[in-house]
Length: 209
Image: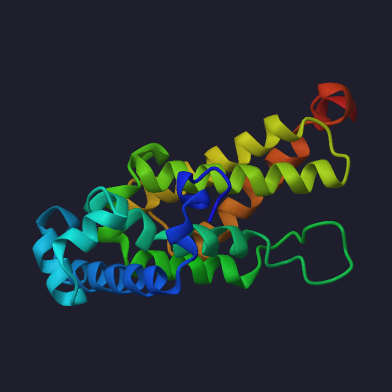
């Protein structure tokens, strides 16, 4: 749970019974959305499948969108992990080619595209888009600051915005590419953003002329 999440200080969030109930609700929603879009899913159907009451549902979630964002939290963590899967060895520099996990993540996201499209709007908006952008930005900023790279806030925001926006547009089929090709294009784009700002704020390409 993110420190920015208002539920972080909620004692119920640490209760194993609460965790089990919310887990059943998440699984129920994903099962319902396997057959139809989120807009056609009802709270009644979700709680019936989960075996809990409506009052229990509203104890934990404001509405189905809040549950859907929680149920899709794994995609946010998977995205962040896929982008950093190369960090398994001693090399401080990312490779020229994307880690295999990135294409794997994109293929898995495509399988649930109908659900993700309701939460991740074109351009990267929507509740899932905001959460993905926030977590990607935090990770990129922390890692850039740790190695002393300049302007960590600026570059981290650019990286998070680019990845979230491209992913959203791809899921909405505004970008046509298979997962492997998109992973390659995204990787090169993100590397370029990381390398664009050098010491003093000057673009690296300009400083090497």
